[in-house]
Length: 121
Length: 121
DNA sequence: CATCTATATGAGCGTTCATTCATATAGATA
DNA sequence: TATCTATATGAATGAACGCTCATATAGATG
Image 1: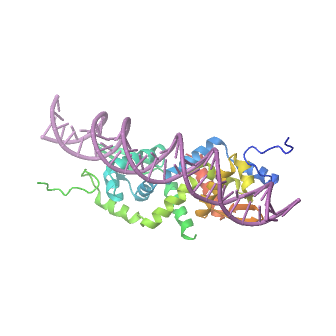
Image 2: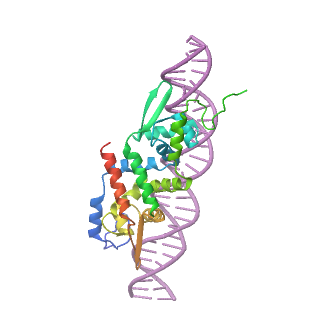
Image 3: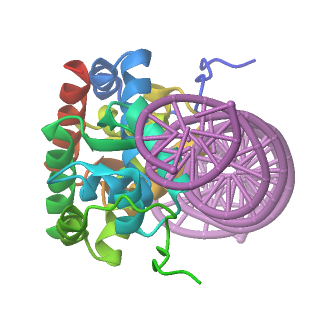
């Protein structure tokens, strides 16, 4: 017979109830967590980061991007789709040509901040 | 015979040399890019984000974390390893028990900033 | 020293994901 | 209308990744 109620997810007994309660308060709801994860996931690929860096100063068409980051047009288009879906880039059409730009100045700022963090690590 | 030199990565001809040159200046070196990608990749998993959120106010032992985020001790340990390797958490041992904490206030700040960005999207 | 406990870790498995290749689409032009 | 061009996209493939399970390790305790 077991006297101690077994923990749901951990077998051990060294628990700090106060800290746990506080930590639980810091949790965010499932929806926010999912969006946050997706947001970071969008930044977590070298090709997509290169695209975002390339777009810092001015809009570029798909062909430009392809040339700048040295990747096939197809690969670039696929990644642009993901960036679009996550609202990190916007685009405008001019005839056949599609110009992409950063959707928001926040985007580049966040990358810069991450770089700063890495630089003094 | 081909007069136009074919582009290395793109078949099209609509190129904007000035913008391309500027964009190339915005590129970062391979090493920085790799570190940046890894940095964001570390944030791009729900379990790891939950761990980081849980650690906002105080250190927690592995068992605490397991309880807070509702995951097995093993799963938590595996993710803690990744967080450690990327210098997002630090730890101290006290007997058997290992206490984890955010390595740097920057970490939580960056998450908060991302959340803010998402909130007014 | 033997055992118990908290944590770490390797192997295996299923899933996700980025690229390539082939092809579709849409706008421009002959 | 037929074709050319810039971009988009579906399918396939291989690599990366997160979880589980089993087990290892290290500190504490009898």
